[in-house]
Length: 372
Image (cartoon, rainbow, N blue to C red):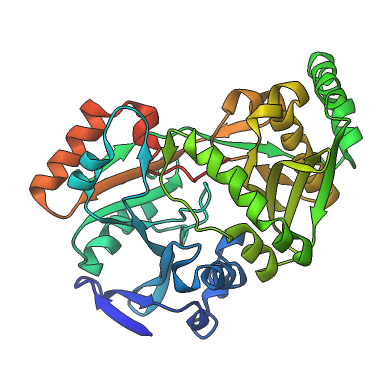
């Protein structure tokens, strides 16, 4: 379904597409500078995974026009509030009172980075997206997520949200292989890496194909559920089976790495690739074996080795565990995000929560992806 929402000034309009199958007809992929993971084949894959509410989030696709010209494209996502975990500073019930049963977001909930909104270079994305939210006329709590730093929402009705930076590792083409990466590390970090890798010798690495990922599906879910139970910040939880369905949807661009010890699954990691860009997606390790075998650090190494093997130029490690990722050579990338409620009283309540109740890490959890 395609419908238009009039903005009123300068022939500003927002075209809302509720079905990813409409993207090709609308020329979605022709937009200049469209981020790789906003291309239609990825959005169609996420939509297929989410059919029937399994995997989510519920997404619509927006084209913003002025005087008949497309000036921006963004995702409009609906997030259930009941599953949000925002650390120890605030009870879930109070979140529901302030935000409501659902929240609405312009951006991508499944991973960090500027992968959910794009505008022409001459447009002010930070000023444009709040205008889009207003034009849609949908009451409730709205988030604008992961704007390029410096494009913070200018509208004073919106409250800024501080979040941990994304940790991004630039892959030097001269490395050629993971061994080349190790050779390029400073000696202190190379020694530490080899020590960690020596503890990983009894762990088996499996690259799961379409058939295998289905057979591992239940074990993957058990590990991921254990991770969520000890995670303070969870803004959105994909439904069971998300990883295996995503592998089926785009088998060549989704790599699922499974780690077993004596035949038992002790960890998994998911890598998404679009051209030269790679994203470390959902992952988990069994804490029982983590210290002894350095599972988490070796999982990061395995993801990097896979990205190098695939010829990628960068790896987005996400927002968690910034210290250990910086030791691998990843550097922080900051983004701006903001929130508001369309109702005056509840907007003031949200502002008070962000500024006086939530600590910065808790506030940032509102826009952080589930893991990574």
